[in-house]
Length: 148
Image (cartoon, rainbow, N blue to C red; front, side, top):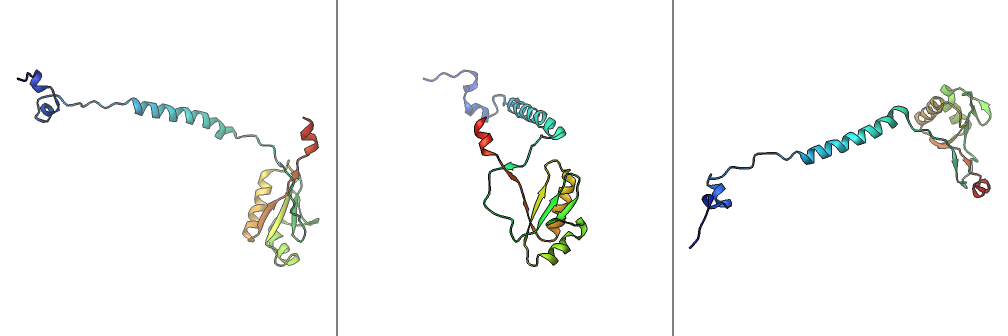
């Protein structure tokens, strides 16, 4: 003989409308996700506003050379030269095509204290001329690095 309390108390009684259904939403996972996103936003907002200071360009030595390729040099004051001769940024592509017929790439040498706006303008101009832009960097001093 079987005895049942509260109209059976099992899952079958709920299907028949005998018990109350669970109508509350669990918001704990939602609150956890929102708090994590808030923390991520708070940490990255500071970096986006002020930027990250970067000291470039010191890299390991590369064996490729700049022979047979045009070299655009940008001084700290923003003056641009093509293989030692002064050149206007607006006439740079035409001058490179005249002096270096068939050149596909250009080396860009810039002082590390040069304003980035000038470097970006030169790179954009060379990009419009369909040149591959290669940045020239100074090798690290490995002897000084070993002494530290």
